[in-house]
Length: 137
Image (tube, rainbow, N blue to C red; front, side):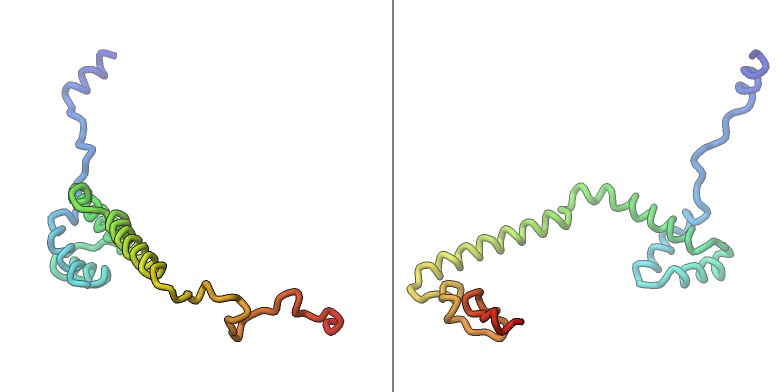
């Protein structure tokens, strides 16, 4: 046991948090992606200008992880898409309720209030009373 303790005191543990070889070029990579360039073009840029060869899968994973890290603090202050959609939905609901109230005030019958027989249409199915069963067989 003594030998292990001596060894651990002499040798410091290696760093567990490795930095990606792409980290120094993060700004350039994200700039290319924001301008709409594909990952294939970014890979060509890294090979020709920086001398770095990596797989497209590794580049994709690096970009996604960096975007996720950058978005997390900003997401707390900005409203989510669901919050924006619910706000729009609530506004539409209020508008629809106002329209319903206005139409209820008018004395004209709406289309849905018209009797079914009066609404002619090419896709209107005959009722059970209108079908002659003797003609079916």
